[in-house]
Length: 419
Image 1 (cartoon, one colour):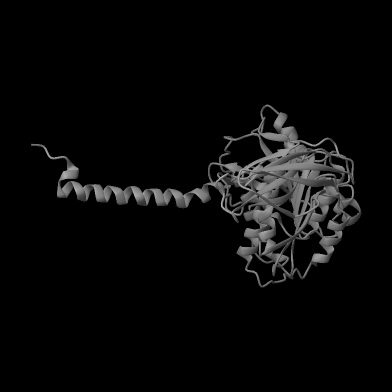
Image 2: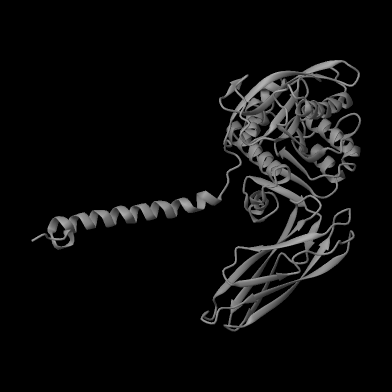
C-alpha cells in the first residue's frame, strides 16, 4: 500500500525541512519589508550616468561649453542615452571659484542616476569672473535644454521636462544660482552647497527667489563660513532650509582637493553621501513630485538626523508639535488643530494623515486660501477600538501640504490613549 509522506520517517523529515525553508523565506521577506518602503537618496538611482560636452550659445552669439550629465545605459563620456523614463527634469549646476566642474563629477553623476539632466557650464573660470554673467550662463543652460527639446533632429528632442527646472551649485556657483533663481521664473527649486556672497549680492537677490530653497553648509567650512550662507538663508523667503553637515569642510563637497583647500573631521565620502542625499531628496520632492521624500525634507526624519542639523521654515505652522488626549474604548476623541499660513503669499493647503493604527478622520481635506498670517481650524477624529486596554495608545501624523508648490509641508502628531 502506498504510504503518504507524512506517515513515513522520510516524509516527516521532508516536511520538517520544508517547514524550515518556508519559515526562513518568510523571515527574509519580513526583513525586506522596511527596505522596500525606505528610499536612500544618498545611494545611486536606477540609471547609469553618462556625460558629454556641449556648446551653448548666448543671446549675444558668444558661446561656452558645458558638461551635460544624463541617464544612460552605461557609465562614462558619450555613453548611450537611456530615454526609458523621459522626459527628465533638468538642473543647472554652478561650480565654485576656479574649480572645474569635473571636481563635482560624482555628485553630478549621482543626480543623473536619479533621472535628471544636469548642465554644468565650464565658463566663469577666469581669475576675475563676472558673477552675473555666470548666473546668466546657468539660465542659458536651461534655455539650451528647452531648445534641444523642441529641435526635431536633436538627441534630446522631447526628452526634457521643461516645466521642471532646478538650480544648484557650490560656493560661487551656489551664490550665482541664487542670482539666476531670482530672475528666471522657469526655476522651481534651489538646492546648493556652501553658497557664497556674490556681486551683485546673493543676499539681496535671495528675497526675490519665490521657490523652495535648501542651502547646505558644512560646520567646519574654512573658506566660505557657514555664517555667510546663513545670511543668504536669512534673506530668503519661506519655504527655506539651512542644513548644516556637522564637522564637514568646504572641499568636502568636491571629489578631490584643489589648491588652498580646507579640511574637516568628517571624511569626504561621508560628507558627499550626505550632500547627495540632501540634494536628491529635495529635487525629487519638487521636480518629480516624489511625495515619499517629504518625511526627510520636511517631516519627522529631518529632525531625527544626527549628522545634519536643519533650520527649516516651511511657511506653514501647526500651533503645537504634538497634542494628546484620551477616551474610553469604543469612543471617539475629537481634537482641533490650528493651522497658520506663516509664509509670504496666499495659499491653500491639502491635509494628510498617516502612521495610524486606529480609525482616524481629518477635516477639511483641503483648506481655503489663507492669507499670510491667517489661521484655520483642522478637526481630527480618532475612534478608540472597543477592545483597547487601558493605557493603550495610538499616534497619527497629520500634515498640511502647500498647494502652491505641491511639496512643502508642516506636520504635527496627535496621540490618543485609551482610558
